[in-house]
Image 1 (tube, rainbow, N blue to C red):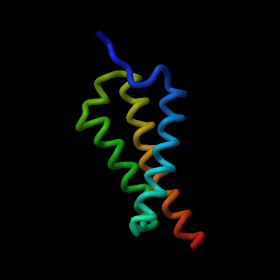
Image 2: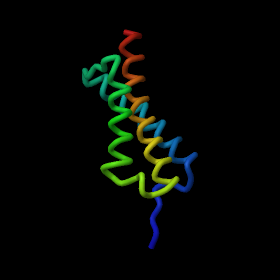
Image 3: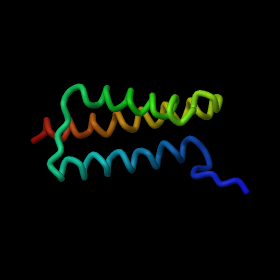
Image 4: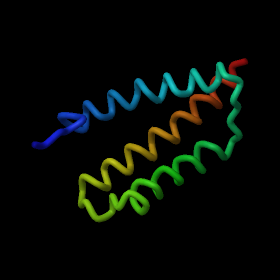
Length: 88
């Protein structure tokens, strides 16, 4: 039995956007703050985790796509937190 969390990449990106926004808002409301390097560091960390630690590099194009979306999501979460801080 195959189980897919998403039907296609568009649905995955749409869901990611929802969680990026929610995650950034909750972290900001909990008093967490992001430095200017955090988006980059967390984005690269997420890419490393998805490609190396979870072996996404060996799953072909799908593995790479998921890794890139994961890295982008992590990057954007911290970028949104920075934007919220700048708008204080």
